[in-house]
Image (cartoon, rainbow, N blue to C red; front, side, top):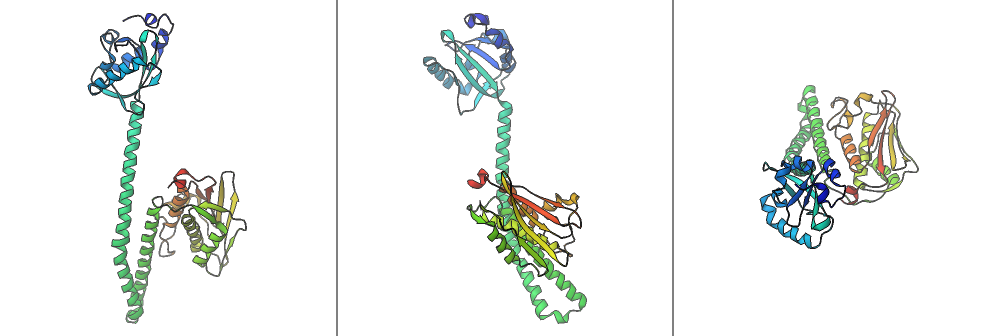
Length: 369
């Protein structure tokens, strides 16, 4: 093979090719390879002498050779630095017949010769393919979830309503025929039918988060908080206060309504004081609005902080405190889908403060659903 110094017309660039980590080739106007550096030998599997008997077309799969010959001839008419096949998948061919994904940049040098730098992008392509597979799997899971939601709403709710109606009829018209034990069983039946109905509704709401988007609108959180309080109608021994300066923000109204409703109903459900207090407030942070819902309830041990946001998790027996274990999971999913975060501060016996943030700059997925 001709010395690198001669091929590069006396320039001291040959040593750069020798130490380069990327494969580099020099070819003439006929595509014959004049020079290959050690990295090219490692990448393609040919020795120094073998490269002298090859053309650049020998280094690409046969199915691409004819088109490449035509493009090489066209390039010789207007040589300039560029990347080959922009937007296309390029393949290199090793001596052993294996193919690999590649990017190639070409630079014209003297006497019509071309310096080609060949990059093995197999790891990048593998990551891209893995990403595509994950996207397809996620789409498949979302479709299955949509079908599951349909089955739940149509195939489970109907018989559940029938059971509930029958239990209500027995309670209204036949309860006097039951002894104390029978009436207790009937009460538990009605309670658990309603719990299951609430659980199904919660699962359906959870499954819709992120799949069904509402138009972003200007929402006055003072007004929204009052609406939620009125809808929940807390018992008379629980006082709920709302800060005077809650902001007006561009958000998905229904999602934020569900967040406040679930946090408030959670606080109301577990309040164990004769004079319960719940306070809704907000503080402005540099990049977000930080909302808080504080109560003087029983408090939560730190070891449970992560668990309570998991689907179907509750800290008390369901027959003692009626709960589906879905509400805080819905809060977490909505807040995070909106680009915020949710957490709490609490100690047993000291009440709890749940925080969530609404970013001042909405994420792209929210701006462009």
